[in-house]
Image (cartoon, rainbow, N blue to C red; front, side):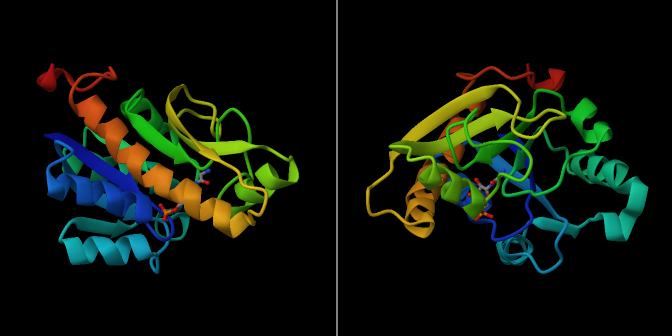
Length: 202
Ligand code: GAR
């Protein structure tokens, strides 16, 4: 079982889709801990319901010790792969170094297009429509120091329709995100997408 840790800031629907896949047995993984910078996030509420360890850790609660606190929580729960799921903060070097190559993010567009600082959530879909794109999609990629720059692992394309609003496009892309994130983790758990897992698993 691949041990997963989550970082989420808002609704947590991607995290939920992954938890659901674990419970359904379509993903050989175990959600161990969820950390949110937002004490009111849907992600934390969902986690408490699912009986998974949950922490509110933010710059406000931990200041400059935030990176170390996130890393300590991930390690305490023996997390092997960290999933960013709508996490709107940059990760500190402590976590990036300890989990290099084992931190994933989902982005609601076909990177490298429509990524980078300030490109998140509905802003991405507004930009895709403003650019007149005919297709958009979801991207699962590795996380490094820069926003949305890490190596792309998988993408799923989604058509853009002439009558789309940012909201209708978001809905279609989010459905793809939910499929893609859990399916990608299943391929990682099965060894089909190689990432540097801890030696104890090799
Ligand atoms: C998702 O659409 C995710 O791709 C996006 O935030 C949303 C979170 O939804 N992330 C980014 O834009 C990162 N740049 P969720 O909380 O319901 O999973």
